[in-house]
Image (cartoon, rainbow, N blue to C red):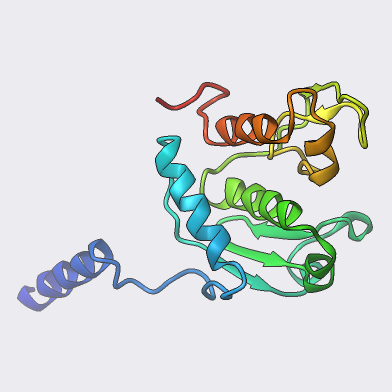
Length: 172
């Protein structure tokens, strides 16, 4: 009985100090700067969530049923693993990469679902209207940023504030 209690205590302590085995395959160095920035933004916006994720290049069709091959990346439910399509990644702008990773981390870390029903008009639009959430099923892209009436930097700040908010209300 004493050994069972001791084993339980050691297991509980290992889980508390982070010695428990990870659920994912780690972070490819390509994605570490995005994960670091996301983690800093969580602090800025006072968001809650456990940043225990892996981000790797891989075959999305092997981890998700992808309609028409339209996904750039995918967060496996309950796995904490983000898989990114290498070919599509290579064709993306820096801002598109950030929006894609933030979208997937919105699912994996913040436990946010898709948010497709709220949009706003663009100034001269690449896509009109443009999304007001990074959690839109098609995340905002560079052309949306330049089309935003208030300008790209304000639009990006609005998107980040919405992403890290609780039920649409900024977490103060």
